[in-house]
Amino acid sequence: MGIYNAQFKRALYIFLFIIGSRAMAENNVEQYLDNEKLKSFRKETIISGHYLKVWDVYVQHAKNDNYTVNLDNYLIHFSENENEYIIYFKKPATQKILGGGNGTCKIKKDSMEVGECSFIK
Amino acid sequence: MFQEIIRGEFGQHYSFLPANAYSAKLDLAAKIFWDFEYTRQFVASLNTSPDYLAELLSHLGKSSGHTAQEKVDAISHALLNHQLHVYPVKPLQVGEASLADRTLELDNMIYQVRHPSVVLLHQPELKNFASKDEALAFIQQFDLDITTLSNLINEADWQSSTGGMDQGKQFEKLAELVLANKLVITKRSAPEPPKPESSSSGSTSNIGNRSAGLGPENNDEPTSPKTNTFKTQHEAALHVSKNINQTSINENREYGGMIYQNQDGTFSYTEPKQGTIDGVDPGGPASVPEGTKPVAYYHTHGGDDPQYDNENFSNIYDPIDKESYGDIPYADANKIDGYLATPKGKFKYYSHTNQKVETLGNL
Image (cartoon, rainbow over all chains, first blue to last red; front, top):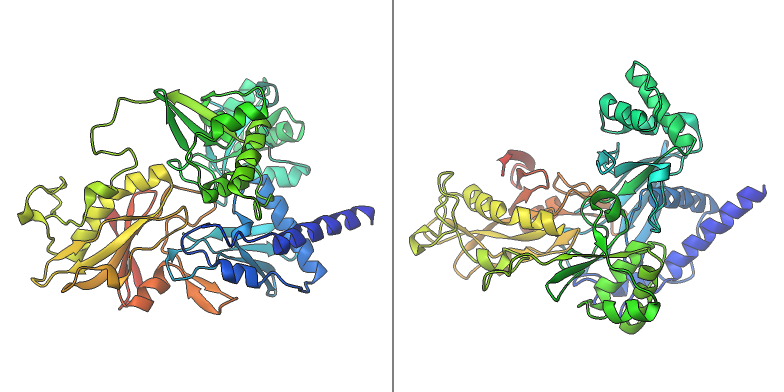
């Protein structure tokens, strides 16, 4: 139970960090990065605690494999189907470009293991 | 043996090291294993040979058994017992800052801010600092804008945020990270002085708005106005893709531009534009010369980066905006075709009329 609470707190902290971190709107982060859109999502929100546990699984995976996506530049969307949770990473842009850095990471419901994780370019 | 890069199931790269071999004070985290079955699955998923596993085991003084499965089991035990470590590594570069962005040339030496895993792969000479002030003074000589600083800081610790930090604060943070060995500064002698007008980064200025009468028999840069067009759009795209792909791979940065049809029916291309690690604006139909017709875009995908789907045209449904993004939607939206040069040297074509992808060959 104690371990569960610690995991939950950690996941909550990481999630709050994401939604609370400044999106560097005043910085020329990337020419087409839509800082206004990033900012517009930084507001009071509600999220399922279960999804925070799913997020924690992704974080462990990303840490273990040295992923380096700059989360300051992303919006995160959670969804699920019968077999998996899907975390969608969106790097909002002010205009359409080739690639763009959006991505998905799928986590299996039965084992809570990370399945396919990939970003587009 | 231990500098070998091994590809994992989902494209990540790893390097094995025996536990007693890693003495550098770098902040590198080995992959964590806690369960035999998981460890076995991981080892079995690696794109490596039983012979390599046997070599590793022999180095550890362990018997490797006879079958491939026995070798996998023995390696798994070595990992679980911490006799052997496996590190996630980045064979190219990490993060969103290109190699060019993170390079300083000073007194005939080339310095680069790199992720510590570069040490496992290439064992470069490192520049050391006695204090944060010393590190800061040196790092401030790099031409790092706030975007690159943010990306480098993120590279050392992707859970950190630079939001709200001005450039000075970000330089200070970077110095702290270097001092803590979460990033390293590599150094090496500069190569021979470059020829005038030929920059190391590349080909963008050399390729130009050109086109040459390429045929497979003529891959040279065009020198005559008579050879500045192509008979087909495939030929134009192939020519520019061949010219720019290696630069794109070396820099792990995308490049792209447009293919257009001239009034005489021949085809040409616009100058390759620099993009980022995961995107490029090829200019769009409005960027082609007046009186010509845009027919396609071309682009490269940079290096073979395990975080990305490198070998394919991208197409992803965005549940936030409820529309698709990527290379294929870009072609469809602009009613043009697309070309892709991949890190593995494949030359691919997307026809927006047939909505089909075809591999035209190798570059």
